[in-house]
Amino acid sequence: MQLTPNEIDTIEDAGMLDGNPVKLLRTKGGFFMAIGKPRGRYKDEALAAGSHPAIVRYNLERAYPSFQPAMMKSELASENSKVEKHSHFLSDSLRKSGHDVYSVQTGDKIEFQVTKQNVKIHSVDSHVGDGCLIFGKMQIGKEFTRALAGATAEKAMQCGVNIKIKSK
Image (cartoon, rainbow, N blue to C red; front, side, top):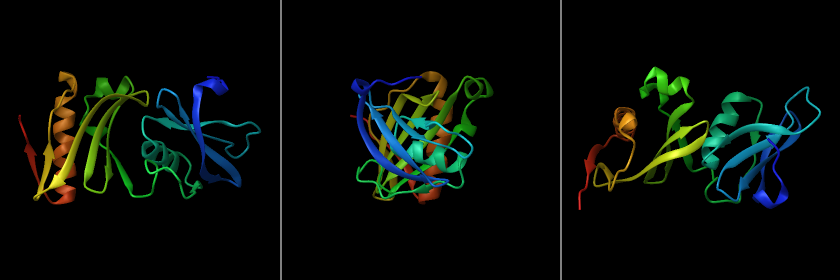
């Protein structure tokens, strides 16, 4: 996949991989990619991609244990974002077709994302308050509800809170 300069919104330093710089690109469509040279390669290539910079960093750190993250300027990519993968709650067929479920926690805010081939297709926002993981409006495909329920329960247990859905 080749990107032209007019498709790129921003470029930031993401860190170092085997002595080579890694850049975090954000496309004008909001997709993020880590670009760099892995060991033994002579040209830059896409190392990881995703719908959120924290998800890109999560996938980059798992694929390349020698990756050393840099301090990011962007608040979205700051180190206070905690990403967890909950794809084990998806059916085998959804996992095989490239779907994943992530939770991205920044402070008390938690966003659950369903991705396909690293592109966000569904997102549900929640926050921790009054000892509960609180959700507002939820719109998600029926085939993902069981996985979202599992991811929510797992995240609530990790945070030591209950789950509450507010209806308006």
